[in-house]
Image (tube, helix red, strand yellow):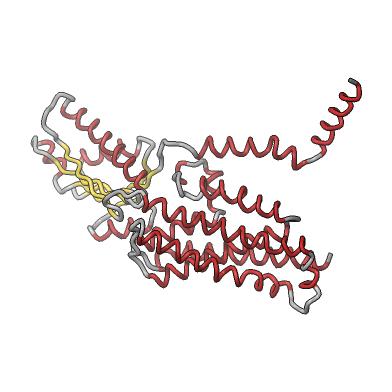
Length: 369
């Protein structure tokens, strides 16, 4: 029995000394429960709403006060003409627009039906449906306040209109997100095991004694995978278009250029992982586990970023898929050009440069060692 007790104590000591085991036992569960608890939330909030108020009377102001005090919506500005509605939607910051007809309050005071239009960005059907549901409920409550719940005539008629996805096809939301997820995981996985495979097979020494510079070695490793992953991305685009009916409303050349940039960024992430990993198993674990959950949960692929705590929103801003999904939806669904996606493109360019520099720097240190 004493021998068994000694063995158990030895095993406990071994576990407590191993930081990686302690991280798996306690760190990862805590991290996952916090992320899932905050992100997996069906309550929408801070949905951007713009207002086109052609009447600007007491009734419209009361309705808007109820809308923006509900906690579900955030004021995204006033619109002064019909063309401004499309422009606001293309920025991506506005998810719905409230349009009040001229003389809205006068029609209510005279006992006539007043018209209110709710226009929503349906590129994300879940947010569009939720916004319409919340706004319709607020308008019904206001009507009950001014006329009583038993009135048979509808005083305020809320007319609905969806843009960019009139039929609320869910594939329009899931295909861009799935594309970003697949390309990130496959590209990072391919390159993450490239250097570690060379180390395990013993062929890395042959490359190290060559006259090639670290930057040339890294770029040489990335280039073949860029071409292969680009072909993979083209295949995914074709499947999304011809199988799921995803439109390509914008420039195809710009779309392919953004695709190439995102693939290069994903491959750079994989190369950085490969320079730090000691084996192919570690590289594969890092590529799949570390990248998959954040991409699915924090990129806006499934859950709106506006619902997340500010700390997770900042973490989301560090994830390349978040910006690539915005670019895909802007080009494919909204028909936007570079003028609307230049800031997301710049972010991806900066991230690519950072990851490539870090990979080259890490590889140079290994050469010196």
